[in-house]
Length: 100
Image (cartoon, rainbow, N blue to C red; front, top):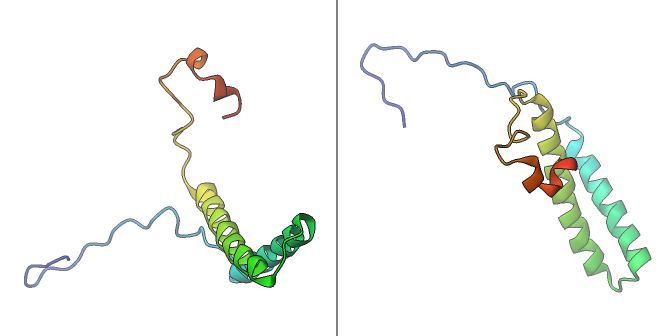
């Protein structure tokens, strides 16, 4: 909690770099539709029985899609500092480096 001395005014802080990075208004609806479509496709392909499995998988897929989309939007708005791409570990010790 911030306390201010009598008569002092709060100073203005710098706006976040993520101010302009927002999901569209329709993002939750689109993520829900994507979750339902993917869950029904999995139900058909994998032969799941019962609708409860499809319901809970749709709910889980909704959360995964919306979270991934949100991270993608935040990553696109973040400044490029080079982290975590740069590493002090030699490339010969990092066999996965060709995929990162």
